[in-house]
Length: 251
Image 1 (cartoon, one colour):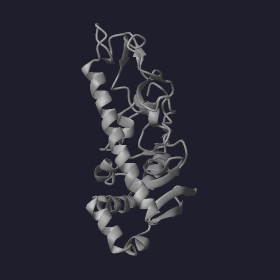
Image 2 (cartoon, one colour; image 1 turned 60 degrees about the vertical axis):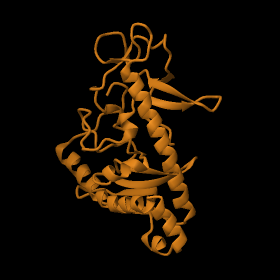
Image 3 (tube, one colour; image 1 turned 180 degrees about the horizontal axis):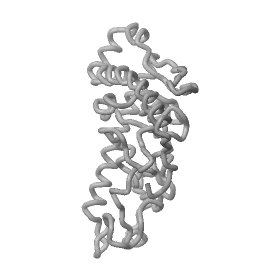
Image 4 (cartoon, helix red, strand yellow; image 1 turned 45 degrees about the vertical axis):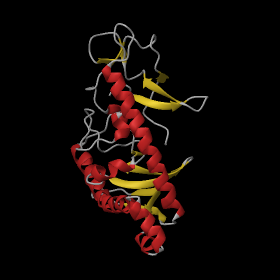
């Protein structure tokens, strides 16, 4: 998975070190204001395609789906100056923050928390451990969410590998021209080419169908109409003189 860009100080959760740590779930989404794209699991396509453009990117671990949030690096057009997220669906990549799984030297996965986002002591927010040092329901639920996300991500990677092997992806080199002026080149992104998709042999198409992945491809293609919505958002921000907040630990 792409490296999380908005984790400032991730640390493995430690029962003693983090006993007094609290996490405020109402701190806003300013931490994601600089994320113009982020990974999206296959299970999220159904809701995400209604509001976002879903594209593919190539990284060190192969092809992965991403939700496009802005037209320029460091700009998330869905986070306003107050740190509010302006969309009905919130990607799981954001919802899991300030927690994240990290690979340990023995190849197992450990649970980390962003210490720059959580605060020690005080009375506001949710604790990770109770007075006896046991995991709180909040921490347990957060870990369960991470594990479900990781499981779904493995399924997503398998889908992307099959998509890449089928040869239906093509580079997306597009130029966006907002009404307010200026141009933005969208490069380094990939989309499914419909002609290549129609040219696939029957066994390959059947395999995609049996796996429920033709539906995913359809939702990806449908979502591309939301690229126009990014231009509208950019124009609205310019007219209002709005600027997104700088990424920070506290939102």
